[in-house]
Length: 244
Image (cartoon, rainbow, N blue to C red):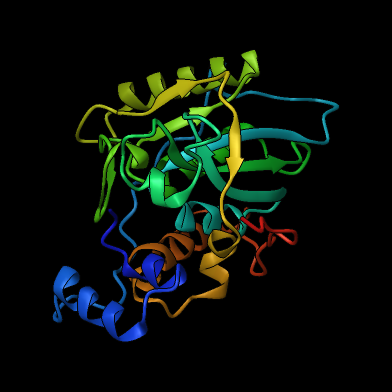
């Protein structure tokens, strides 16, 4: 289970119990908000620099740890039409937070990103994903969260996007910007299941939640600082959420 007790709070756990568990898990002396410390990565080049002329809508699923922060960052990227939190990799029957949190379902917490290639390229989305969204060198974990449900992965059924993803991972490996090998997997042929409604737009709706302040708001700030041309102040929120 994730030590982010706001998720338990969102699921209905009493606030007093949540506060006690947070104090135990994170420690009373932990800073409320960490400074952005994300790795600048080179822009995609060669085969990784995919162009999609004539397309107005394209879709990809990014898995990079807790979906609150992944969704929150991409909602602030110009050209992203929607970013939806959900699960991918397992069955429909297992696509529920309580089950996915066990780490035994095959699912990853993930975000389905729909974007306009005329406004933001797939190469730019990958650059954001590998630099400010998550640490791609961490295997089956991100920050305080541990388990295969927090793996680093890209899911797409588009051959061109798959090839570009693999090419960019190889480019980043050669560049030496990361101190360890990348753990990111590229996969396809997997169904995406929309997560419960209380997980959608979580960063925007709960900016004062302790987990968000420590782990997710610094990612949005890193996006603003490192990619000012891509950053938009007002996030593109998911308007219709799951009622599961």
